[in-house]
Length: 207
Image (cartoon, rainbow, N blue to C red; front, side):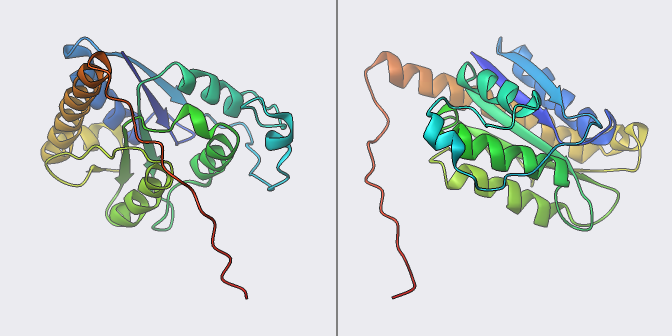
């Protein structure tokens, strides 16, 4: 089993430190992990062109490497952790642009797989950012993995985040909970318990 973790910061600092703690707990349960950092190169947003639907290839038509790489890795992954720094009480524009495109073009790569979100801030804005990222899971039939507190860490540097003992313990517990759920799902598959085939309806509120 494998969990893909995405660092939505342009740096490998506070958010990355939180994700490494989640990864540590997963690795202790013999679950493979990979952390992808979005880096500092420009990332374009989704323009709703729907070319990904027309192509039918689980790929975004704008091939700037990172989004299609994530979709490809998602297809081979069993769970996900999305991490973001807090910018003006909101997730980074980088991770939102990536997730908008990845979920729009590669929806099936994420469906029914557990997901968790992590937010990092100096002080406030974590719960609002946490809520935004969780909505990617709930629209795509993905079980949300929780911890022993909201999945947040606080600090203005890697060293300060490490000093946030409760935050780091929350990250560790999150990894353990993710591992437990993945193992439960694996047992379900072994016993031929398939995920539900839900009917989908789109409502137009303009009559």
